[in-house]
Length: 232
Image (cartoon, rainbow, N blue to C red; front, side):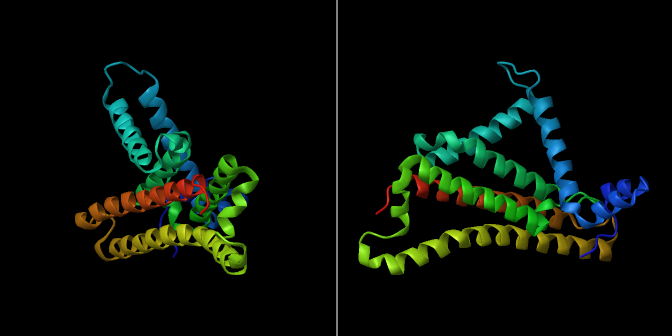
């Protein structure tokens, strides 16, 4: 799906550089990932540059978001899993911001590209097994072979397929939902005009953006907790 107008792609076109123009048209998900990162860094700086005992509006919003996510995660993982909250918390905020930016006319949601969602899924996959080795050392292999030795030929392939399928599941679920939602908005813009997108659809977009980020966040926690547990 070719977008009719993307602000930052047009900005790169204005430079007249063929290499920049090619990059912007070929990799809009990377370009808008940089935009999301810049927005998040700026918001974080503005919110925390003057931390006070009586928080302002920006500090309140960030504290509510972070404490809510951390409390939810600790309820699932227990206090022992609190140390990996920076990873899953960052994943949630990043994906949610990437989803939301697609609701702004002229902006492309990075999560509507399989490259972005796959990179997030691979990060979760690698960190899952890092946790497994951190907690169990070489004995982590017992998670993959089952309770008795004669079941290894059956359990091992199933476990390996299941773990690698997580990457496909996480990336395709998020990509499919966000690219589908982007396509719906694209059609509505074409039918109703750039300034006449039905508000209920935009409201649903905010809800979908949150749900997809939260599902990714929750599944990541479950995978991390599974790696922490002892093999049965």
